[in-house]
Image 1 (spheres, each protein chain N blue to C red):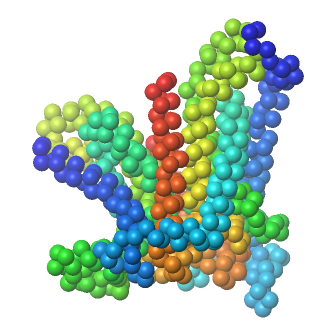
Image 2 (image 1 turned 135 degrees about the vertical axis):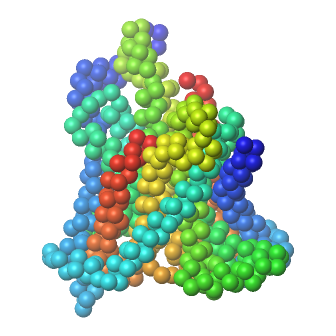
Image 3 (image 1 turned 90 degrees about the horizontal axis):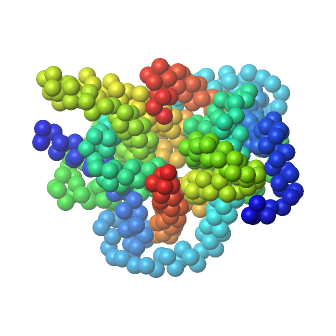
Length: 308
Length: 262
């Protein structure tokens, strides 16, 4: 041996090498305790919590098991909040596909190695960083005296902006307090999660498939519809898991931007915060979990898990 | 064909601009002289808000707390993630798939689920909110990043490297120190940096595990909900963007260099 090592460390290392089960136990002990014990336990405590109820007189949580909280959950108001959120999640997912697909296609098919590396970075950085600040940036952009209004004014199109804001359902006093603005921000925030899986799926489509289609006389639109799109579906499904799930639980965006109509995340947040009704918040948390469960079953059928 | 390529390029460029132009306005507004509104274009430019922000004790405390939380969460996540990756790599055991599911779950489920679940558990065991409850929350979702990076690296490490080391007479500890650890080091840096960035700018889980403590994102969020000090908020937003960009850029460099090396 050229490098002398401490004999105790050597002995321990040898002992561990000879006893794989002991080694496994030592490696796994703490992570198991943390992830399954603390995190899994927390999810379980959520279920327990949902069978408690808030005593409306004292404002404290009554820790005897009851179904009352679950009955409170299935009221018309709560269910319409759930429906609105699911509708938003679905529209955000569709818009993300429409915007992400050309970018992903360009990255997978046309970009040089260098450009591709830059573009991957350009998609990854927003995915990893500054979620809250990125939401906030739209407050600057969409406010009544902000950049969008200024831009429309410069083009002499203020009338058009007012007409858009006047539309019932999606408009409002200004873009930053409208449904339309909120939708733009949701798509902006979750878009990167859609680009990367589609790009990965398209990378796996052999170039010869597209060439064969063209050689056989298909026009670009037909090639896209019959070859590229069907083969990209696993990637689209994988991306949609994120855009759908993340929209479903978000409460920051509806708080900062939009007409303050409630979403699932916002409802959970205010039930546990302002109302102090942790049991109802816990029960409500199972709505996105259940929706995502169903969604994952569908996505798995489309091959999303192989594309992740 | 030429026109089609042009349309595709324009659409791709549009998507990239959509992703990046908004942040530019955060940079611009940190320098505006306008105090009360989001008026565009800014009536004038100034750097004085940086001094005002730095003089604010709340902000300094929040920045310190965020940095400490991110650092400790990063360490905890690296330890847990590396241990799990070491166990999962080349060993099959009962519940292996379940364990990998539990590692991924905190980032796959909406943050609010992790947040409210931890809140409910903290409430049930009557744990007081503290620095450590925030760290528990952050470390839980950061484990996934550390684990993913380390396991990906281990999977690309050929078992023959370890066998060669043993055949040449290296003991278990030496093989770990001189063969396995250098192999993993870039994955540890990448995973650690990403975990740091993820924790530094996290808001949703923090809201549920923080009690009265204010991390920097919580400070920003509370000043968005009750607008006050707009110019100072803009400066803090800028600082958060810069401070999360640095570790991410470092992580990218390290992972690319490691890829080129293998």
